[in-house]
Image (tube, rainbow, N blue to C red; front, side, top):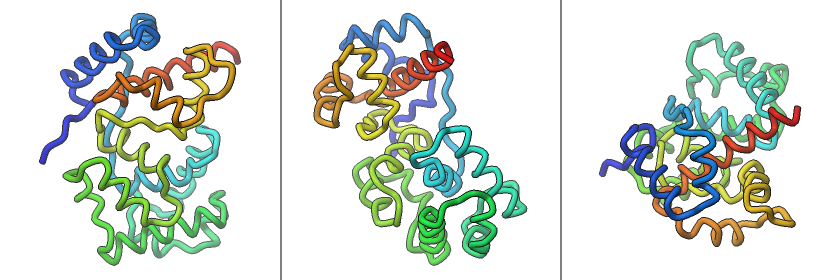
Length: 214
C-alpha cells in the first residue's frame, strides 16, 4: 500500500495548510519562515547508520564521525556487507563509541543475514516499522521516528523524545518547563495527520534561533 510522502510538494502544502489552520503557534512559524526546504529519502541502511551515530551527539560531531566511517569503508555508499566486515579498531579510530559499534554490528549482521528487509519497510505502516526496528540493538523510538520522517517521508511522525522538539515547543508555547511526551501529545492533538510538518517547523525555528544566539 503506498503511503503519502511529505517530499511531494502537494502533500507538504496540504500539511502546512492543515497545521496552520489548527494551531495558531505553528501558523506563526509558517508565516515567518514560509515553505521550508527539506531533504527526504536516502538509502535506508545508510540512514539508520547515520541515525545511530547521531544519537546524543551534536550534529556536526556526528556528521564528522559518519564521514570517517564512510571513508574507512572505501565506498561511496555505506553498505551492510562492508560495515559488517569493517574491523572494530577502524570504527573506534573513526570516533564510534564501543556501545554504538555493537549497535552498528548488530544492524549490519541482521541485514546481511536477511533477517531485516529495510526496503520492505517502505510498504509497512508506521507502527510496524517502529516494532521491526525496535528489535535491532540501539534502535529505539527516537531513531525509528527519524527513519520514518527523514527516510520514508511519513506525514504523521511525532518525535516526542527529541530534545530539539521539546526545547522548541517550550520556547514557542512559552512553557515554564521542558515538556514531556504526554504534554507534547496534548499540544499536538490537532496536528494529525500531519505531525511531521509541525515537527519540521519546530526544528527549523529552533535552528534559526540557535544561529541568531551564536
